[in-house]
Length: 64
Length: 285
Image (tube, rainbow over all chains, first blue to last red):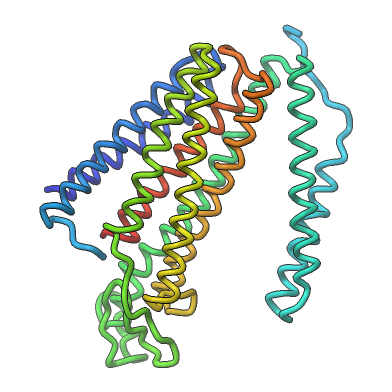
């Protein structure tokens, strides 16, 4: 369950990064869409980090 | 400049850049085959860096002179697009290697799957990951692995935090708060440098205490290929953001014109995502 959640959040994070790349190509510098997608990217990275720490603390994620 | 297209004058940098890369690669080839020629490789590397410096300097000067219009802006954006594509392919190859080895090659050598007949090569071989006992006795595997919950976790915290501070800097630049953008960009650079230092410590530990080397079988080679090339990309990102900092200090960029900063920021986020992928698939899973 935890691993599935980690994979899901990872995919959302990659998607927001990909969206940022798309906006970087299509918009000009006045647009805020690159910044907004990168904000989502760091937010999901933070959630992912919390999930990893939770998994480590409670022993759900074994090393290696 | 509206409706126009800026055609730069003939540039010597593409030809000089190609020559410099050629010298560098010839030097590398001679070093790998004959063990000598490091001076040629070093000269080529310096020449490549010099060409990059002068080429980018010319572009910045032309941009500051207001020579670029909307069409030129699109050209830069598509240039960044192809760079992004090449970077994705680059890391996809290495992640693909790791996936192939773990999912296909090792089970085959252990007698499983469609090519399980490969077990005839080393009948006593037992597949595992990390591969501590390579099948051929001439190769000794690592005797320990790096725990993800020590230095790699510290580095993950450094990189994710650096992405947050960079996003604050990015927002500040969008709002015209140059001093705030500068300060948070400095914090980002410090965190990036911390990452590289910790990775250096981790490599030292891996080599001297865990027996994880480039010669320690497929685990050692994939470990250093993936993390090493990522570290190289972090270095590129630090240099890029340092140039952005220098440009902010010189008064470049405005709320409506800062593509270089935005592209550099996206690149840093990309490097962070690659690291999180490495943390998951090289260290944890």
